[in-house]
Image 1 (tube, helix red, strand yellow):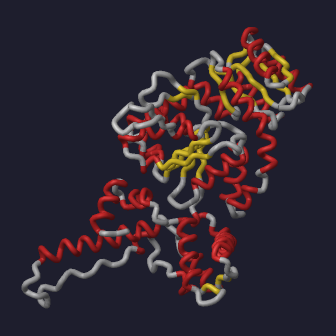
Image 2 (cartoon, rainbow, N blue to C red):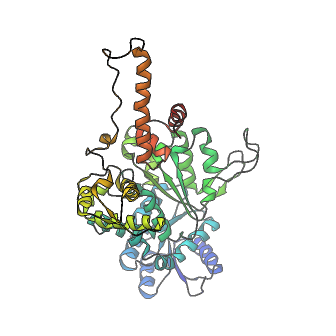
Image 3 (spheres, rainbow, N blue to C red):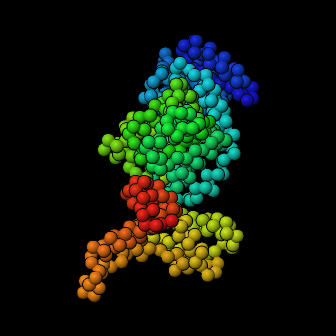
Length: 459
């Protein structure tokens, strides 16, 4: 790190100030200190700082007031809050006010060094990814413009972000963008589908395990938190977590440490948590199926990703962008959408959102006879809702014409199986053969879907 980097330390406890000055000095930073809010404001007005660390309680005000001042007058200076041990409410309040991150007393120096490192990397990450957002989240509709503006601010923080939106809107794309634009962009991005992990394996998957800790644990195994150390852990379909796992996840997030199954000591982890679900998480909280304290902790900042039907003006350009990418992958000329095809797309509500648009265009690209896609090539469902896409089930045998030897008891199971087969195949196609998401769309568990796939002989 360059010796020209500087930090402002604001705390009324002399011992804390001296500890922080010593630690940051060893990292090559020039430091100034202030014992009060008024002293800090004077120093901020006179000098540029690359980072500010402030205590929550100050003799003439609070750290929240200082955060507000810095966000308003010195927005390029990340500020982190020093909170009392276990004071989760204060940490969340600081993050909501715009703090970059927080560290608890007594200050863990390894955690502090990681925080400083991420804060100082923010400016260069912003320059390196300034154009990424425009190319990955296409659109000029008011909803998408607002989302991009919020993403740019959120990426500068270390606060947990909850991404809400319907299936297929691009929640993981939003999460990856937050990660890549932030200070952790050079670290790992670890996505995990919470609905795809069997309940009995969750603790081991998230926190790892030691050799011999249970039957089948033949070697030490790091968990997802360790895999994401220094980067971002993206919890997709977080609403699928069982309550027992929610308690353990909450503790890991609050303490910034984990204990592998079978281990005697805890391991510090430096992970930013992003989460998403297509479900109404607040409704799950009201029903007692999701812990309020965990919801409060992961939902420090909430992002709503708009469905495709609410950004109709983006559709022509978005379709062209998708076709350009698909044609490039196939090494063929980029086809044009006929006016009739474009009009058909405009009239369709896209219950599967951008993912469904991609599927439709990929199929149309394969069916088109030349470099022009017609409305007939789109093969759009005839109805306006998702249920209209399900093929009609075969008719029941007419008892007046059926062979007398055929009974209803033999016909009914095959009839039900055919309905199941059609529904499962449609769900798989709608979800790009992601079995976890297909199971969720069908309203059954992942294991139940796996059983039905085997029973029905669907590959």
